[in-house]
Image (cartoon, rainbow, N blue to C red):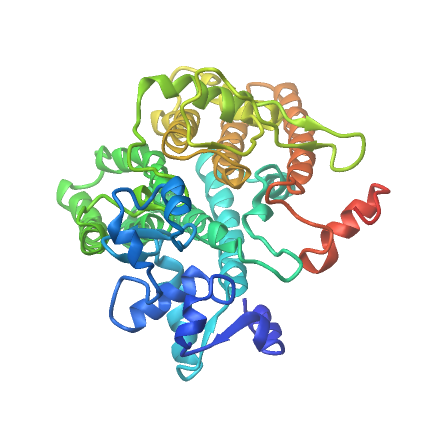
Length: 478
């Protein structure tokens, strides 16, 4: 992290934005991003964005309809939330509070981070939190950590989960980072939450502190990417295990959860109040009022279960005769009921993720119910994430890292559960070979997906690293 900020100090124009901004700069869709506008709003003591609003939006019955915009020649702001004559940011505010304000005050109230910096800082933190969580999963499910295999699975997991596609750097133009930033921070907080929950289960003496930290992290998740609050399900067996521990006094167990409970309660009150003063609804984060498609009537219904599974778990890719050989594909189903379809890659077409599927069924009578339930929850949570995402949005390459991250964690956890309960050295060897082969193949699939045409890497991105990768496969200037 220190190295990044030192490097950034030599290129202030790229990594920072001078503040305050003029009204013309705030109004510009291209010179200023929505996170900068959100910082500006908070700095001015308000929750709505200080930008121009076309008065005609107040005069029409449906200001969220693209056909209405075209009919009346209305000027609108794409992917901003509009409500009652004001524009709002429906992306989570945590990155602004965690990064933008500290940089602003440390710079003497003259600089705020650019969208590139928000993404880069988040990626550094997300990388560290992912490493910590993989380590804690290994400690929880294995009595003896084999460091070479742990490091190998971590590295392969980074590529299998398409981790690096959470950040965008389009040859210096990174406006699309507004979509990536909430995912980066949401995933980072989710990994920290689960890692601290595992620490609390393992170290009962200091569980109070770990649980308090987990409480802060889950508030960070909701304040970044609310749908990733599903990670709380993974902690339920751990928390039940702590409360069911007969060796601990009930009063001590209750006390260990008290600070965490208060933190979550205060965080929930804060988030609900923030939603209410913007949209008049404590559970409305602004997604329903996006200025892209009319999303006010999107609902959860049983008819969306099957297409959710087909698209997110079975969607076949497009194939090419040169690197990258695979990219996301699109199926149009006659019974589709989603908002948009921009391509996906089915989870079950990545072989390493089958560990997540079969892991919970491997063991023997008397196994720790906490460990078995912990591993068993990854598959249903992955499907629940797919269902909620399909119901309230659709399919899109940007959603691949979220689902594949859950699958990667679940597969690593299943691997350690299987290794722990293998009865013979030969069984352990076979499991290790299967993990080696499937993780390498899944990592290569993830590397190909990182170049997806919708929002993937371009040859000039990331200081030319993708170009070097392509050239390694004898693909030049493409």
